[in-house]
Length: 159
Image (cartoon, rainbow, N blue to C red; front, side, top):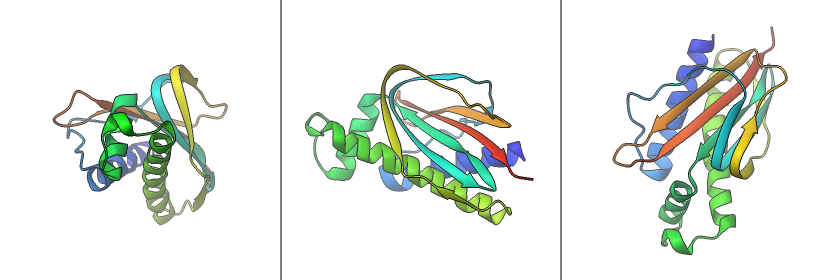
């Protein structure tokens, strides 16, 4: 099931970034089994999942990429975007990726609900999970830029 979920997460990220930010994730990008903990720097959104799927999805990106996406969505320059605007956009992107995953998990017989997104900022953000039956992560390259987006999913499926 882990391999199926990793494909769901990658497909969700590709769809959301393409649709909302007009950014294409490189076809060579992968979501793989991972070891926890994971360290992030920049802007990190997270959304928790509860139900027959229990877990949390983290979406991390450099501050500059987050500002560029926010400015594109709001029609202004990256330098004029407020921290709150960037937080809102990263939270919403995380919510959309997780919502897409939720839909796919519900289709597989694992209904769940989502929390509201939370956004963390800083360097050396260390994330880990107490119950980590499934740990998936990936560094996704954005075509035509040097930017990378990181995704990490901690999950447990109810039997």
